[in-house]
Image (cartoon, rainbow, N blue to C red):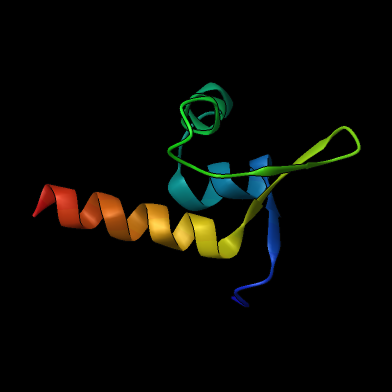
Amino acid sequence: MPDDELLTVAEVMARLKLGRSTVYDLIRSRRLPSITIGRCRRIPARALGDYISHEMEAAA
């Protein structure tokens, strides 16, 4: 996936296999950075990759 790709909350939910409220909790706690465009919330693909890498390192 391109680093500059912007993902919807639904796409992040599908990739992480998490529920909507869990994804919004990650955004609210600033563990998963996001941007707002109009009324739409978007998560940069790079931010999702960084989040996954960080969680993998923490679990090791």
